[in-house]
Image (cartoon, rainbow, N blue to C red; front, side, top):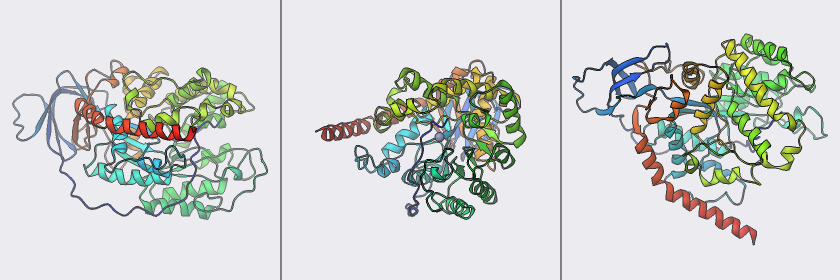
Length: 504
Ligand SMILES: [Zn+2]
């Protein structure tokens, strides 16, 4: 079952010239007064603490005395609130201006996006609104990647609000090279943009390094030798790999033992394992246990993306896009909204319903839940990923939805919160500390109005975030989102006009 968007058009472009060097703005100092700190690396809750944040780091965590001289620091009232590591979406496909520009869809390409990156800012603010202070992009168009590589630098320098971005390079072979049922398509000649040889796979990884990507996403239509070359070259380059497992069944394809013997760092969906667990057409409970054990033995971690499958199943069963959680409708921008509607939304298409195995989608969601539970029982590190903005999954709030999914299969709130922060930190940024709310760690934090250890739904009660050491209250985030509302309406008008012109 492969129900994910295929990312097409991987032609390399020339790297964008370095933007003008504007001095990075120094992050101000903050005192969070009298707050409960949940560090997450242990099970303790540190009640009534004052927390000093300076130069993007947690400088001090001290017993709240009310007597500390805060000097020029900005005071954030932490009373009855909870401060913990911010959430990370470990599997997202960020919508960007670059993606719009690269689009071949006449209703989308060439939209007037203005000159001040409002579109990208809106997406970044939507993530922050949900307490998401880290996001790993698992591949998009070259245009969107250029945009994200630029944006990553702007956010790091404190010139744009946003989560810490990790930009992944998707590397995939041509589908025809490994199609399980040969359909007569000739296999195109190998090239680094769509490699079918080890040499081109290695070249693809090296180009990604030159362009400054953060990690590699191997995709499933890579043959055995190319897949292996990419995984090994990524390791040599100091990259982690998170992606899809290679296809099974063709002469040049990997088999199950091969994939587990040459593991990626992380598997990007639990659904990927469904292909590997299926013997014949059914999934037996014993297979799930054996599969979970194979994952544990391989050392791979997993991003289950349960909410993704749930949403796809919802579209299949209801024949409509599930509603986004209350209050989040306005955060979905007009271009994304259009992608979610028919005919752009392939999950609502007849072709999608007609594909073989469509009647087992619901079972696939059940399978993923049972498998993820078996992985958790074996202490396989899990992370929180959403595949947003897949139809129905809004940036930001979908992270909260996935946390609820993990809670529902049995993880304790503390374990869910670790999956949403520390585990992602270890996966994408292992050199940058533990990610816990401790002195010396980077100040990517979320402040909640209610205790998330008591009820995971409280992760939705965001009072504000520290991102790269800068405080943004929820009021400020909403104010900045509202500033962009007129721009969003303008985009909507442009799209309506183009649709009307096309209909004539
Ligand atoms: Zn994805």
